[in-house]
Length: 84
Image 1 (cartoon, rainbow, N blue to C red):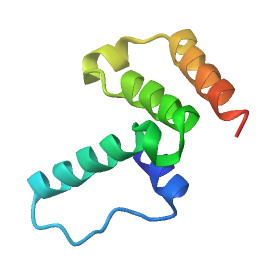
Image 2: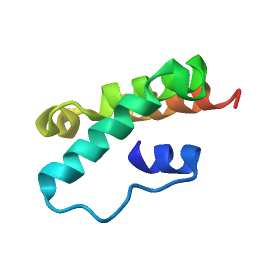
Image 3: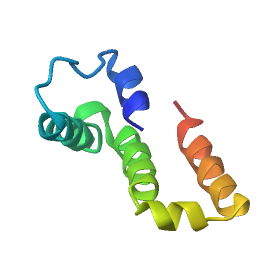
């Protein structure tokens, strides 16, 4: 989702961060930006909210998902992206 946010904004995260905490802070700032309807509209915010909502689950939960559950996520993501 972070890569998709960089593509949507045509601007990668600045790589001049001092430590992991600063990188996490910048990622959180980017997440807040792209999930806000004021950034590029409600439809774009919905896409990022859906994607982050799924992918930010704890690692164990994600690893336990079946291929069907992962496919369902990508199918829904593609459906949300289709009108764009």
